[in-house]
Structure formats: structure tokens, C-alpha cells
Image (tube, rainbow, N blue to C red; front, side, top):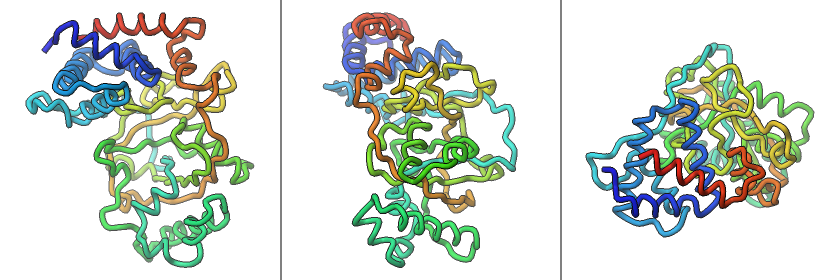
Length: 340
């Protein structure tokens, strides 16, 4: 389905109405420019989004981006014979991955408590009261994570909820990984009141605002081959407001994407490259033989100043710091309409 020009233009206009949609548009085009997704596959994706938009008109940009996300995971369009998944669309192989390497994913302590570890583990001891009543009281949080990790190392007790998985959200059925050595580097000589911001900034986790306790889930390289993992594209990132399809400086390993370093971006640094990243399909956490480490507490909010808000990010990834928003929109619209 090619779709009428008017419907197509209406969809593109709505996408570009807000900076978050312009971010997605920039990454769609960059994935094509860098050869990270097949042109025909991208065309099919955009056609499916158009079908979904035609079936039910989104009224605001955020609703349209949800449609993009649902098309990516194969939930939309309603026309069943068109549905397919567009996740893990980049087939760039890794140069190497050694069994001795480790890889990490960062999540909120709250997510660990609610979705991964047994309630009996949370209710054991005084740590639970500290977690619930005062998230800024970091020592009990660290003690709680250390206790869980000790049980994992001893291997004498199953601490997980039945069926607990990383990437267990049906709308985003995967999790993000980065080399542990990059996390280790960020952890050096940082207090818990600086560590959270450092790791959040390194990995571009802008949705973690203030007073968010973080935990590292560390996965042995020998266990990663058991689950599919790929360089991320816009289809995996969806509404992620600080995803950048391609690093500003070549990493030497095209199998890895690259996070956006939030602190460097806010400071207007010459490079905003953070850490290497990939997306991995969801997996039962028990089979991954992970380790846990408390990673401090976020204290600073990112993304709410003129230097690092969504429009500033659009200009950065479009390489159009001196362009007006209107000029960028016009250029993006022209190229998007040519896609399908």
C-alpha cells in the first residue's frame, strides 16, 4: 500500500510536530544513510505505520510514536497479514565476544524488587523499610543488593520470582547491554551520590530523573550467546529521547551502537559518545548467572534546559545547530516522504 499523499503527509506532519518525533525521524534516516537497515525493509516498516495510522488516526505525536513502537513489535497494523516484527533489524556482526568478557544492563532497584526477586527477599530484614520509606538512604540499599549478590555467588538459594526475565515488557521485549568495563570505569572513585548520575549520563538514560536508585545486572559473556542480541536501530529505541543511531566518532566495531552521554551533551562537548550498546532479546534471568551491584542514586535531572532539551538534541543529531526548527522539519519531511 502506497497510501494517498494527503494521509502520508498528515502522518509525517504529526510526527514532526514535536521534537520527540523529529528525533525518531532523524534516526530513521540515519539508519538508512549508514546502511544499518535494508532499504526495502525500512520501506515496508513505514508502509505498515501508514496503514496503522490510517486504521486509527493518532491525534498527538506521542500517540503516533506508540503506533511506530507497536508496528515494530508486530502488534499493528490491525490488518493481520501485514504484521511482522522489525526489532533486531541490524545484522552488523560483532568482531569478537569472549567468554571472559562481561556485559551489564542497568535498571531501577524498584524494578528489581517488583519484577525480579522474590517478595521474601525484599521483606527479609530492615532493608525493605528503608527502601520503601527513604530512597535517598543509600547504605541500606547497598546492603540489600550486596546480600542478594552474596546469595547468587554462593548459589545455595533461588532469589528470583518464578519466570523472572530481563526484558519482560511485552511492548519492549528486550533489554539493553553495555560492556561491563565501561561501567567499571564510571564507578571509579565515585560516591553513591555521584555514581547514579555518572552511570545514568554515560548510558543516556534520560528517563531516570532524580532520586532513582540504580542497580547493575552483570552478565557473563559465556551466557550471552544463549539469547539473540543486535546493534540497536530506531525500531528498538522507539520513544527513547536520547537515542542516536550512529556515534559521532567511529568506534572501530560496527557491531556496537553507542549511547549518548547526557553530561557531555549538556556541556556542549565536541563529542557526546557514551558507551557501546546492543539490545538483547528477553531472557530468564536465572539462566544468565548474573551478579548484582548497587550503582548509586540519581541526583540531577537532565533534559530540561535549552542546552540539553529535546530540540537541542534534534539539532545535534541532525548536525544543524545553526538551523531553525522549521528548516530541519522541512528537510526531514522531504526525505521521509521519499521513503515510501
